[in-house]
Amino acid sequence: MRGGSPESTVDRVADFYGAYIDAVYDEDGRLAGQLRTHYLRADLRKRLAAWEAKNHADGVLRAQNVPVKWSVSYDGSGTGSAYTVVTLTWDSGSHPSTSRVAVRSSLETRQITDIKEAPAK
Image 1: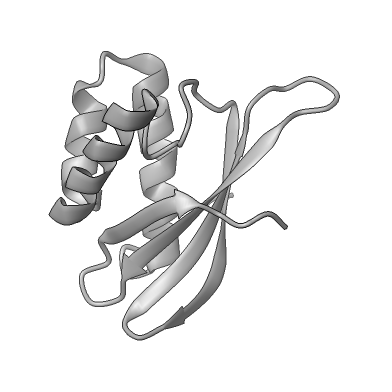
Image 2 (image 1 turned 120 degrees about the vertical axis):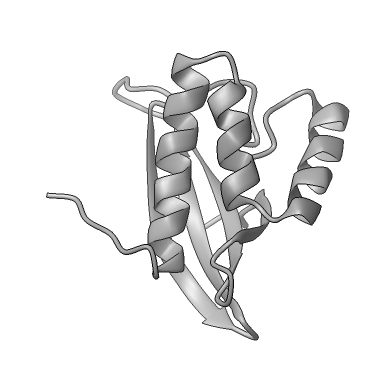
């Protein structure tokens, strides 16, 4: 069973990443753009566009490919923000590779305000 709450910033990050990965995997990018507009604060969208131009990769995923799995975990809160870590799995073989993305969200608006590479475990 899966569930969630629109009031939870962690659930909203999970909802965004799940829908975004599906959109990038399935479509031509239109839905992915709409999801960015809804879930990501405007200044973050501008920063992601600059990062993407420089790195030739998707700034939300921090990669050129689409992951085969994802998970989201709570990583604390403070000063009006909630922090989550998104773990992205890149293949389904016996030794899958993963990467981690640190996501900051506003507790007031529940919008995602920052996405960057997470520190190594």
